[in-house]
Length: 337
Image (tube, rainbow, N blue to C red; front, side):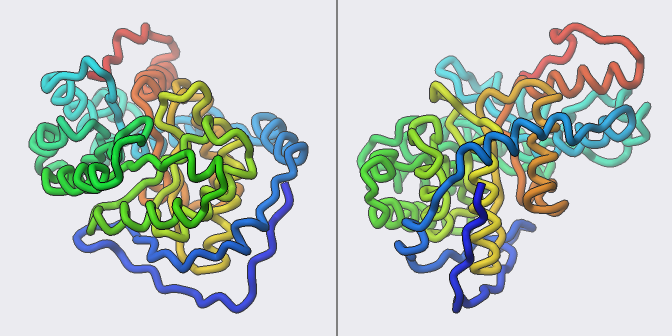
């Protein structure tokens, strides 16, 4: 993939923590259509880059356990099902507080480190339940919003949904963009929509879900990533998990390159969240390797890296048990919620 030249004359912006939180906010910038339309993706080069990743990067034994424990702290433990219940959400929150069995943490020398997941992600209906269940833990509640997953409800209803989730205690809001704006090249409409979402979130962290499986081309993914960051997205996220194709390493590479270009232009750091279809511990390692290669060590921390997943945690815990005991256990011994 070609690295896109950074436009000259940009003013570097100071980035400060959000009120009451440790994470950094993306202040955004004016829409630069010239920069957006300049985006190109060298498909064959990008495919070669991700194809060689598993063979070029590997970790074993204690190092692998350390990488997997770091991944746990970046998981947005998620339940977004039509049959969700209050009790299921409470069980999920209990797992978020203690994502890895204490005996395994003790055996790994990590028993006193207070390891938790990065957040718990639920529908608005369950925000207050999750906030209560996580009280005192420091774990934020993330709410999917704006008519998730299709994002086709009226714009004013989207804004009220965001505001309602923030009022109920959500500290992070995962919004879905209107895919039509991308598919028709209406970048001004996408920018304006994202700016409205950012304003409605107030102090809450905002993650822009691009639904990359619906965007058809990697060029569209690159352009949509850039527009959402210009409009103030604190994170860009691949998918709702409901599309036919969700997170992939190829899409990840494109989005990470856009994050890097945006930081070079503005001085602002934006986080990244792959979501949907990541269920195996070996797969998340490849995402971590790519993050570190493309953006650096800082993007392995939950302030700048989140993983939308639920079953992934069970497989990570299973791999950690194998590391400690030398034997694999059944997945049903590692319930999520």
